[in-house]
Amino acid sequence: MPKNIYKLKDGSIVAGVTTIINQLDKPALIQWAWKLGKEGKDWREERDSAGDIGTLVHDAVMNYLTGEMLGELGDIVNACYLKFWTWWSDLKNEGAIERLVEMPKISERLKFGGQPDLVYELDHKWVLCDIKTSNGIYDSHWLQLAGYDILLRENGYKVDECQILWLPKDDRFDCPIRTDLRREKRIFKHLLEIYKLRHDNP
Image (cartoon, rainbow, N blue to C red; front, top):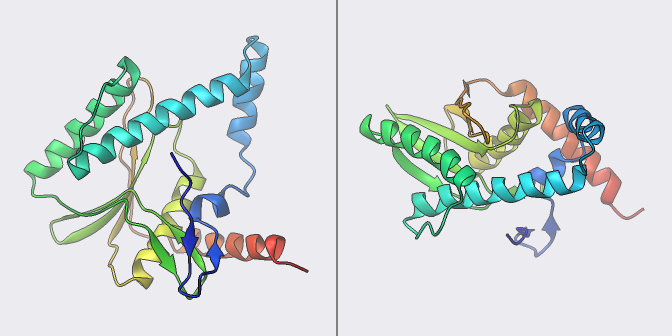
């Protein structure tokens, strides 16, 4: 999947939400790599394989939401996708309407960009939803949603709730919702400033 390039109106290229968040240390990944090493596995190969599955699941969900052909899905990807399909079918039966699906947004004020997965409306509430296939739900996921929340509000959208749709590569499933990401927004803005300081020319 090609990496998104976010440009301001003056043509300047700015960082995306994911790039900004990726400055953080991720101790869970370090523990995961150590565990794989103890088992005699190459963490790079396992990481790439997990990343490929996550990308395929994400693409299948986006294709469904935009009405595109799904194509052939492997067993693991199909199992993750079916969890999404069940969740989304239930929401549609309750009256959910998709409002935005993978629409890139730019903050001219703070100078960054991002592409939220999904915004849907249910019971007059607008829900910002991000899809994850990771082994857990981490603080960095909520920071990512905080960045998207900032982008959407600046571009005239309302956000009543933020949600992680968790579709791990096993039998687990969760879709937690938060209504208050003020702390995460503060952290995200600090990370954005750190990113700018590290990448501005001296």
